[in-house]
Length: 315
Image (cartoon, rainbow, N blue to C red; front, side):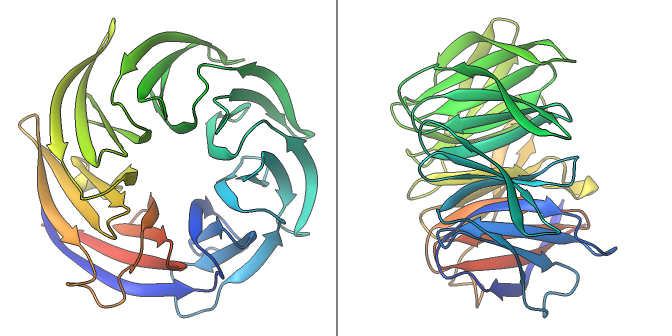
């Protein structure tokens, strides 16, 4: 059960909106993250020492929309205009650049060997990843609208798109990750920006500001419930990492708020609203991205160029 939420620090360093967050081991035993945004900077932050300024790891000359840190100790970022950059964080240098079609809104690591990318042109790219870099294995075109979100459950990838659909891709072979589309569910008339799983359900959110609850079955998805969750677009959602809060998810919105929800008896219930009326230093503009860390830490980033560190405690 949720006990309390504290805003423990605000990180400032970016010169433009922050769109991307990723876990980053850094070069110490401390917990670090990296962030990227409209200024093209990738900045690392020590979450255990939030009073320290961020360190610039690398820079690209484009807006950064997506970030991951891979098993080969590289940072991979996707940008406006289709740039996919593989970076060496030690040298702060680009070691590979691949040009994709459309803005790279989402990067997702399926496993150590496979990375996927979704773009604004409706492309779904599958890359082989090894010590030599990334190699394009497959480029699918599921639709002509943006690909925005990915979540994995068992042997399937559930993906959200700006034509309002959730497309389910079956992983045929785990070793090489051959991926084929299995089924399409119409989720909304607008973009599906965020997806996560909660217990045995799929949860989606998007431009219509509503949470949707889906039952997962062999035939696809059954739509169960709509919840008016925010005033404006739901940009992102995550599951909390705190073991006692495994039945909770967090949503971030263009309405400048963050909300914490709990699944109880199969129903989603609102438990906490985080906004600037209650938390001094809270985001003053759209909240774009969330990331949950161990020890009850939640990281949020937004259009106000700030990154907030939250401490979430359970009963």
